[in-house]
Image (spheres, rainbow, N blue to C red):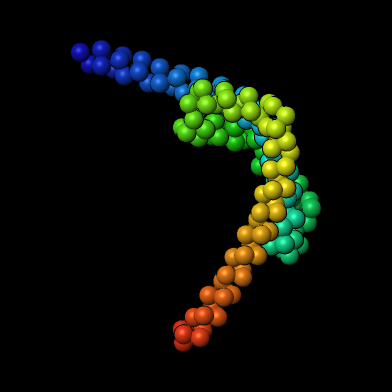
Length: 146
């Protein structure tokens, strides 16, 4: 009986692992259609140009080394698992078709700039809001601890 239980457990485990690998294949195709290497590189460049990071005066060589180490090949498997968690295989196929289309390719091209500019706007807005909150708290008599 124990042999049967362990055999069934092994078969279920192997089948589950195989099923997960099958689910990843369409996701890998999607990530490739999204030009994930190019997108990640451009996103890192856009982040490096935001005022907060430019103010840190990080040498270009550091960013280049970061891009070398932080690449899609290192993340592809993990990303595939995440996408497979939230999308059905049919949805993955539809997304792949979108990213292979002209508007999908444009989306890929402009996303890094959109992210960089959006981060700049968000950082400025966050700083402005924080300044106003601090001013309001000061007027109400709250003191800042050192």
